[in-house]
Length: 223
Image (cartoon, rainbow, N blue to C red):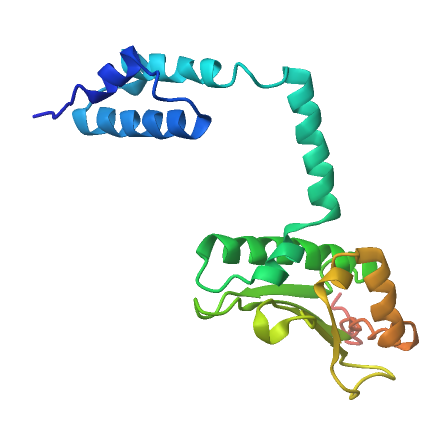
């Protein structure tokens, strides 16, 4: 047994009340849900088709396609200059699942790029993501034989979102160092700071494992 309602058809016939993209999208989503409940294929529903076409009406007063594409490109450039991590550092992510997922995804990506900028070889470090309790952001951490870097956001970390220290070398055993998120997102400059602060150039690389050859047998070979 199916259950269908006439509302979406009536709204599709006269969509004059749908004057914005948001209102039209809401009506279209509701119509899609009606189709699902009724067991109707939305790709062949006349109301869905009319509501989708109504988007052309509510966007008719917008700029042309080239102008909109330019605006999108400019926005992408702005977001690259001011990444989401900066915003998340200010507003935090506590009890916001979407924001928290974005922090961990962007944090892991930025941490990997930082590791390579520092000069760590691929495979010589690990990056871990720990979401922790919903009330806090958790953290993203980079670990290698020589250094450790941790990233988090929230009131307790304001202005000190990054923590880093040396595990080996001249700076090992020194106090924990802190940096704000605005420094972390400036990858090249921050990588140079870490190398300088932790004296990474003075650390002698760990010796590679020595492969021992099998002993040569001295036993006589039977004729």
